[in-house]
Structure formats: C-alpha cells, structure tokens
Amino acid sequence: MSASQAKALRSLAEPIVAALDCDLEDVIIRQAGQRRLVRIVVDHPSGGLTLDLVASISREISRVLDDSAVLGQSAFVLEVTSPGVDRPLTLPRHWTRAEGRLVLVAPRSGEAFKGRVRRAEETQAVLDVEGTETIVTYAEVAQAVVQVEFSRIAEVDLEDVPEDDGPDDVDTASMPNADSASEEG
Image (tube, rainbow, N blue to C red; front, side):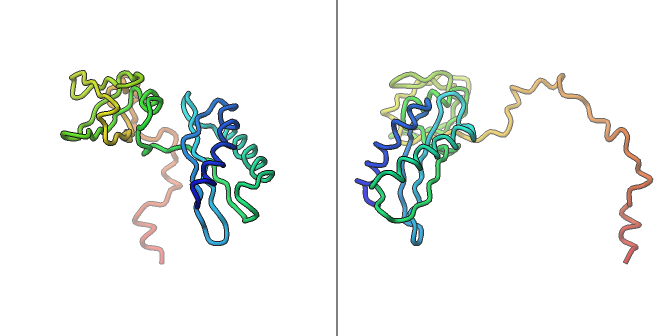
C-alpha cells in the first residue's frame, strides 16, 4: 500500500500508543485479498506488552480508523502486535531493552560475534564477548538481533532444584502396562 497511508496511519496511532506509555515501532499496511491487513507494531519499555494493553491500543486505534478517511472505504483487519524476539536492534532503546541478553552482532566491517549486553547508552553498548568487555558503537553495526536462550545455566542454582525420585502416590496396579496393551486386539 502507499507510503503516504502508512505515514498518515502512523500519525494517528502515535499519540494513542504514547498515551499508554508505549513505543510505536512500525506501521505496515498490506493487501490481503479483498481486505487490507493493518499491522501496528508496539513495544513497552518495561518488559513488553500485556494482553490488556494490546486490547486497549487495538480498541483506540480501531475507533480512530473508523472515524478517519486514511484507509478509504475498503475493509481492513487491524493487528496490534509486539516486535517479537527476532526484532533487529536498530535504536538505542532496543539495546537498552536487551540489557542482560545475548545478541548476535554483524558489524559493517569484520566478523560477526555474540556477546551479552551489559550496558546500553545513547550511541553505544558495552557487551561481554567471551569474558572481554567490548564497546559496540551503533553506527558501526550493520545488523544486531537478540538470541533466544531457553535457559542460562549461570542463573540456575542446582542446590535449589529438588531431586526427582519419581512419582510418589501413583497406583501402578491400575495402570495398563505395555504388554497387556499390545495383547488386546
């Protein structure tokens, strides 16, 4: 769809999103059959979006769009979403929100590397790269993304994890075993 529609939609959505203490990351308008898909990408500075927050943003933007001529008379589907874990780190606030997280950095020159964001500032971030403090200037980064980590062994205190001796109060006499199940036929 046209860039002017996306720009107009952005100007409608920004005050709504800002009033709810969120950041408008992107506005995408795509044709989807007879309708348009209007995707509003929003982030919240303190830990992401809640379902209630998404519902409030969606309700307000929908109300404004219904009263606006930005999309004309054509039908549309509104989708309010978060940037997701694979969002590129392109702004200082993205780096700030990634503090403590592992990131993959592809510099404009040199080899890509992984490091944990220790501190993010206005023009640069300080990463721990294999035990070495490394300063990354945002202007030198071609691309950077947060890496998905399912668990970090350094955060797990194994003394706090109870040992599992198996099920406690299970009546195994009433459970079918593999032999009896295979014989039925």
